[in-house]
Length: 397
Image (cartoon, rainbow, N blue to C red; front, side, top):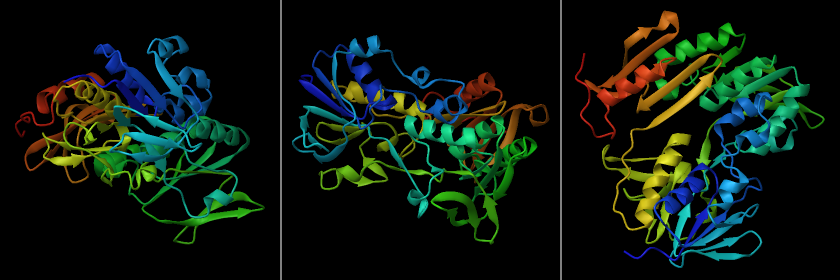
């Protein structure tokens, strides 16, 4: 297969940047173009809810690459310009300013759009956290605030609550789930995280729906629950999940459901690929469609996309993985842990705040989790799940 003469990558965060770097590593000499709605140089997102929000890092420290490293890619960059329309057959993208860009191959890496609560746009002091500017705006508000309410008990909400508590704020964490990360990691680990937050002084209002926000003079004053309880706040963070950023693809010719729907090669149409949070693909090992929202997936999937652009025929069959740091707790999750799984401790002791756990469904290991035991969890993952999700599982204990 002859390599494409040009590759257009829409989105220059971790997934898009990693795709470009992988293309160059594989010897691609054609024209590379980045189109990105962000005005900033590519930066890492995981530090936004932790080091950047806390003020421990200045924004420049979160950059993925230096200016010199980016220049070494010999890629044209079009920053601060949002894509608004795609013609997948022609592989042409129109931007908000009316500019039209073309690629012989095209990669969609536009990521996610945070969900919001009704009415939050009209109130100052209400935030989402997805982009660098979001983190800096929240950091400014927290410097002048005393009380923060975080709506959403998932990974992002729990991390923000932990960071804000470390900054000395009075923090309340509210959400529909029974415990932090219970929807991702189940009740056993969720209950342990709930204790960690409560011991650090976070007020937990979980298992209850948020009715709405209250405000005065255009400034948020609190969060009202359906029970009638009012949670006072000087600032509020809404972390109730995100949706794939696919609105600009309406009428493009691509199939869009929960993300850009791709085959097992991450191909959405002839010459068009998707990568990172926005991509939904057929995982041959699992026999199901999958979409992952995490940093590791962004870089791993990019390697396969780049190889396939250059003529390989590689399915993408990763063992899913994500991590989260909250206070002195470092959690690594491999595979597909779920609330339905049986959880058993394989190594360590939860009472000592260090353990590795196995998740089983139907007698088969489906996930491995490390709580301050990264190395042991990684070794268990290799035994239980292999390097691909379709590897033979560890025998039931």
